[in-house]
Every structure is written in structure tokens, then in C-alpha cells.
Length: 128
Image (cartoon, rainbow, N blue to C red; front, side, top):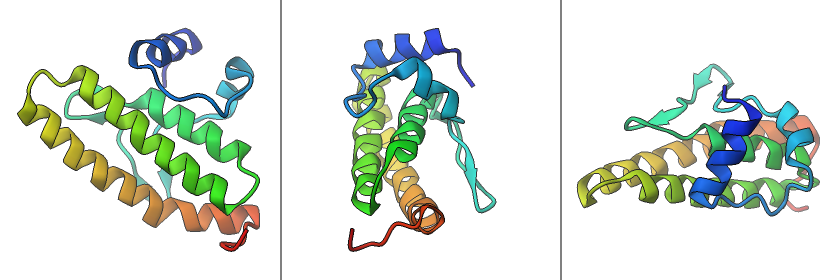
């Protein structure tokens, strides 16, 4: 896990979308970074770059969600934030492409193994 200062620095460095978070320092407490769900462990790095800041934002977005669509919107922001980190840190097209492929797998994993179970846990209906 990273400190609040490191997180805020990463948000600024990568221009990550935190538009749904009103108080970052309070919300930060509720995030666990790149965690595990249902026994599937999500890594905090992607081809040698840290993606923890994007994971923290995603955790907070999910905590703030009020309906199923909010979770889907959070997944989309997560995907976009991962791409911002990737594009900033990739020194050439090959590393960018490899990281983008990994992002697609990573986000699919979150959607497959995380969204539905978490929605059920929170009592969200897909139609809401």
C-alpha cells in the first residue's frame, strides 16, 4: 500500500480521474489498493509500473456507489486511469501495447470476478 501523500502525488502526476471523490483524505482510509476478491489476487504492478493509485480510486468509487450503474462507471474510470498511467510510463509503442493488453485482461477480471459479487453484497440490482 502507498501513503496518502504518494497517492495524491500519483493522482496529480498521471492526471487520474477522481471526479466522484469529494474528500480524498477521508476516502483513502476505505481503500485496500489492488486487492483480492473470491481468492483471485490482482497485482499492484503492470509490467514494472505501479497501478496502485488507480486501484485505490476504484476502491473508493465502489465504496461510494449507490447502484449497479455506479459500479460499471467506476470500472470504466478504472480502465481510463490505468491507461493514463500506462501511457505516461511507457517509453515506446511495444511496452505501451503490452501494458494495454494487460489492462484489458485486468479490467475484464475485475468485471468478471468483482462487479457482480460486490453488487450482490451491496444489494444492487442490475436494472438500477
